[in-house]
Length: 409
Image 1: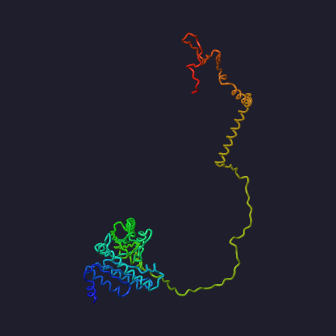
Image 2 (image 1 turned 90 degrees about the horizontal axis):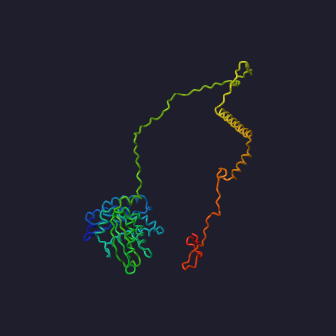
Image 3 (image 1 turned 180 degrees about the vertical axis):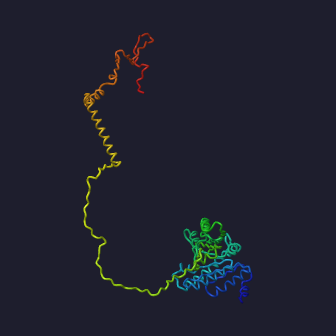
């Protein structure tokens, strides 16, 4: 606090934007950065803090101290960019300890350089300080990603690498309110094509929410060669979105609807000593529960018995009635057979009559008289026609009768 004046004097001049970079979890960075950030913001500078969270291997105490410092720092900066060192472990897990810590420092420098170059490098579509201020002013938690790609489908690969960069805790930018995208490529035959520009832009619109503000910049850098560089800065996330994986879950409070009443303990009263008397009994002969009785005889009076009439069931009565009906039907059939025999009618006579009916024509059976036609009286028509010639030579026969036609219809 006593040297804050000297710090502000060093920053003064034409300064418009201040970057504060540190590793959280220690005494120097966690304690000093919030004080400097507060002074810079009160002076009207666009204040951006780029901080790292310790590795999990550094212990829970250091991580918890870093989380408390980041929460306090977020109140005094316009934009807070948090880099998760544990992401570096996922990508560079085979590196040594010193190399891993060096990578963490490089990531901090790369983040600041990426934001600064968006403003300073000239291009076809320039992104000036006003655009950066629009995106990062009072934006809260921010995430940043950078991606490089070359070869076939380099545009889509570059934007995918940017959103999966170790600078980002999560590649989901759906919750961002504002997004700044800067695209850089080489010159000449290595320059970005219109199709590649459309692929990157479409990918960003699909990955972000519909109401997100997207500002796009386009520049050239000969040092990139055949590569494409995509830098994405997304801001406006909830303050707890970055620190959620590190926070310990709060104990849940359960509210009881009914009031608890203490249950008094159940105490067994003291009734003194229990005295038991032991009485020895002599063995007794076992006896059965039923006494044996002498076998008796039953005498029936046959003269007093009444004759019982059997009672038939309903089903039995129906069967008897059905049998009686069958007997009656058989008697009728026998009576008809006897009648036919007496009248002299037999099956053979009936059969002969049927055959006679089939052989005799119907008009004979009905006594109808049919008169046969006289074939000689029938009119015969010839296809030859007599015709009188005009020169008086007499009649001749004409073989083409005009009233007859040999063609079959």
